[in-house]
Amino acid sequence: MGRIIAIDYGKKRTGIAVTDPLRIIANGLATVSTPELYAFLQEYIQREKVDLIVMGKPTQLSGKPSENMGRVEQFVLRWKKACPSVPIEYYDERFTSALAHQAMISGGVKKKVRRQDKGLVDEISATIILQDFMRSKGM
Image 1 (cartoon, rainbow, N blue to C red):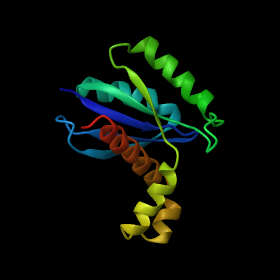
Image 2: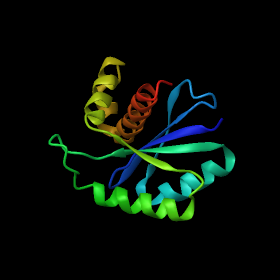
Image 3: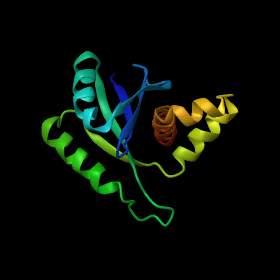
């Protein structure tokens, strides 16, 4: 059984989370510069067996796609052409950034750290996407 990766795709930074090989636990993996995401994933997949990528689907509260959706779709199309053996599924990412901020506050992360380490929010958001996806699939 391979891992599942979740992605919180941003214009500048992208948060990445991953399951353990048995798909029991979701953990933050990294935050990478968005232009480096493709290469990062290619390298990771050479080291670890990955069965699925879950891509956060950027949606407005109204349910309409957000402005980031076009960038996400471009990445997904590029990935599907280059790596069809590792499929991508979309999963609603609404509220994940707010939940990530709340998790940081609840976890005692100092305000200064929260302001300085914006990548941590992206990584936690990806973890929330992955946890919600796993829960929706009964994992």
